[in-house]
Amino acid sequence: MIELGYKQIGTGKKIIMVLHELMGDHKNYDAILPYIDTINYTYIFVDHRGYGWSKNITGNYSCNEAALDIKNLLDILKIKEVNLLAHSMSTMIAQKTALIDDRIKQLILITPISASGIKMQPKAQEKLISDMQKNENKIEEIVQSASKRYNQTWINYRVDMAYNASTIEARVGYMTMYLTTDFINEVKNIKVPIKIITGKHDFPVFSKTYVQKLYDSYYENYEIMECMEAGHYPMIECPVYFATQVERFCT
Image 1: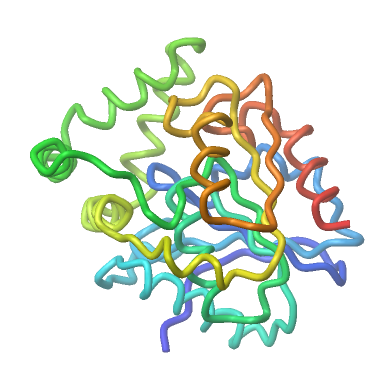
Image 2: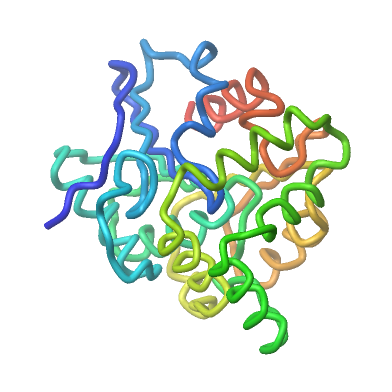
């Protein structure tokens, strides 16, 4: 059994386990740390295989593997109940974890992907994966497209984070995961509440309208809200709002 790298902050009885996205790691949440309630909550920030504190752990980077890694970490930490928070790519992993572990009491999904993944035409999908494998310019292109409201300092920060937070094998592996994995017909078995935060200025595929359309079709117990001043990174762009809303979800 492997043990993912993690950092625990707080001493509260309510536990929030936090998962990161494709082009970052646990550091994506640094901006919220001054604003979280460490008396009533315990936060556990986790890095997937190939990322951050888990950069030396390799694998096949599948959704099933990642969900089992979270399940194993809950066993290691002897956690009986947890609110599982996930961002972007990891929202698929969080949903899969909720299907295999009844210790998950709530899902908090930030700019989420549905369990059907992100669909692309085969040639476009192949090109995107190939461009990521080359490890040049594609990250810059994605960050530039997502950062039109912000200055070059922000762009440089996000590009550096994307390259340094993970191994290229992990980035390509998890991108392949969400482009090729589909377990949408299983989500009817997710019985816990789902809370969703989207960003007003995010890509259309992560917009509130698009996400709501997807989730209305398959998910029963969910609530969605939109952060009006954020794009894809509400935890960085609006950290006070983000921390406050997450803890309201868990109250």
